[in-house]
Length: 182
Image (cartoon, rainbow, N blue to C red; front, side, top):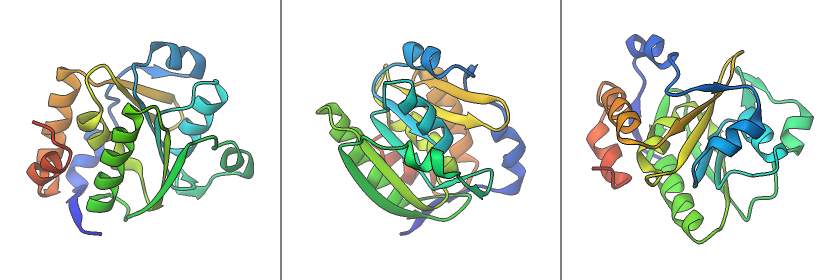
């Protein structure tokens, strides 16, 4: 489990700016989302599953706002074809997480859904997901106390994410190579 990039404190405020529109209605979000759809976070995944269109890939860590998710949320995240487990410490992106994300997206091409259970924290997974999801796909993640952010994997979003990743501590270029992002 090698750390590829780590979030520096100076970049934290910039990550609070949503990468796309904020939704409070999971059904509307699912209707607007492209496929494959990657969900990052337990609460987001729960709402997408409840909306009747489970994501193709979901990354969860059993926590929300640094507290354990309640039993209803944990129990409501299910129905995936496959489950993977990875380690990813808080404020980092590891080789394990990137490998799992790439493998899950590959399986999504064949119609197989994957739940990636993260030991640590999955918060930053939205960034590599935007780079890894195929053109036309979407990534959704939670915006605390506001709703769910839907990011279309288009050139504008990818360029913004590349800029963020390149300013993280570590090897942003390696992150992109591991995901075959150009």
